[in-house]
Amino acid sequence: MHHPLSLLFYVIHMVISIYIWILIISMFASWIRHIVTNETVLRILYTADRLAEPAYAFVRFCFGKIGVPTSIGMFDFSFLIAYVVLRVLDSIVRSLI
Figure 1 (tube, rainbow, N blue to C red):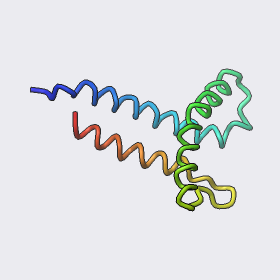
Figure 2 (cartoon, helix red, strand yellow; figure 1 turned 90 degrees about the vertical axis):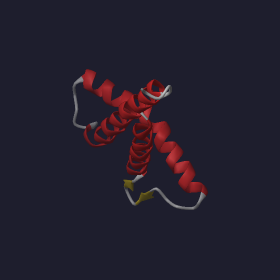
Figure 3 (cartoon, rainbow, N blue to C red; figure 1 turned 180 degrees about the vertical axis):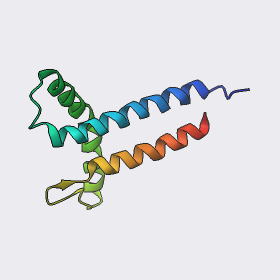
Figure 4 (cartoon, rainbow, N blue to C red; figure 1 turned 60 degrees about the horizontal axis):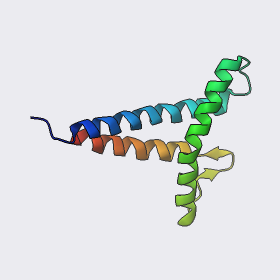
């Protein structure tokens, strides 16, 4: 017998998984945006970047509140922090399915 909230946990797992992929696309977008010329690909990269930015902004805000920088020089670690947090949350949610 499945837990009554299994469907809810499964949906949460799927949303987290999709958002993780958006973060990954956004990370690659920051590297290749300047060399891509296809308009459709550029729109996809731009959309992924816009969808991922709230997570990055939240990480920067939280770490800024405790006085820890999320970037060193030109390297921004907001993606890595957001990715790890989402993977941990996803593991917790998957254990509840």
